[in-house]
Image 1: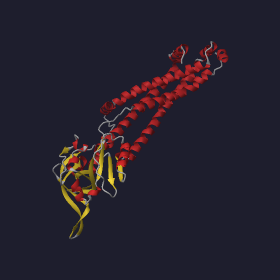
Image 2: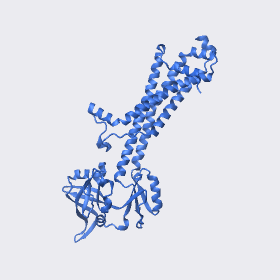
Image 3: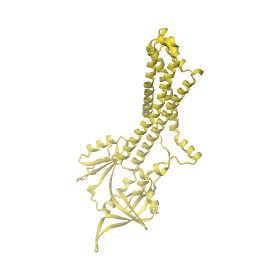
Image 4: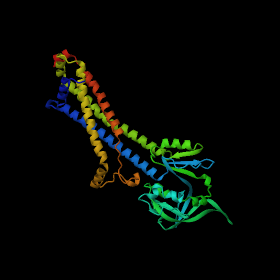
Length: 403
């Protein structure tokens, strides 16, 4: 606990005085440095959290959350479970032939009713029919631009399976009508994936129906590890993989980058916090006579230590709180700030073609704020210990004699 006398002395030492102008400058720099460090950390963590969330939402928006593939036996038919929906699917690689251009693609096959239930076919960026009948195909927006084709056009697709003719085995080719164009939000997916009817796909690639696999779409796809374990229990002799497995290297890189940024930007707080040592050391030097007087009237060394420790602690804590306010406000309005800077200085701060996003994402995470605040306050508390201990260890007689 802090006594009334200790409180009075702490606030007296915190007040600005003309003869302590240099000390005040150091205190201001410490306060501003810590505030900027905390604010920048919150902003960067919020942007990286937002980018990760947006990326996950785009990936799970058009990809199956989990896929169950058979090894050598057909999958056992299991009705939809309460936490997910499933659809039957199959796939194969082919080549699109259109006018003078060719393009390798991944063909995904679905039943007509199943495709019409997928998110990619019922969002606002889907144009055309979502009924995958025989000899019809749904392609991505970027693929339609690349091949200069649109809804209603016919394209030829060449299969990897062959057809026996009088001149030998030739690749199978069939014409498909483009009935719809989708936009997943990621250019690479739009350019390299197309959808056709499941029966047509199996006939086109000479695939056995026993090789069909199940795609699962969960109500809470972010809790994917838990869902994967449940699917493994349901299908013990199958190969189960999820959206997290397919993008493991990407999210690992994002995690490493986020941790590295946290460590680097934390140095701002550490450097600013060390200014507190300088400020408190000068304060101890300037208040040597006052310390001697306090000790002579019976103030204990522990009280002296508490007084100077709380001076540094209050500076660090108030700077941290100020930084939290600035960082949070900036994070919530970062897209408006980006637009203002881009418009004012005519520069592009967030190119869409590189990040696959039209807006700068930001997600304020309370856990990140708590962690940043904790690290900042702990750092400022630690650096306040040394000058406080030095003040408490001053010799009373010497301080009064020479001051």
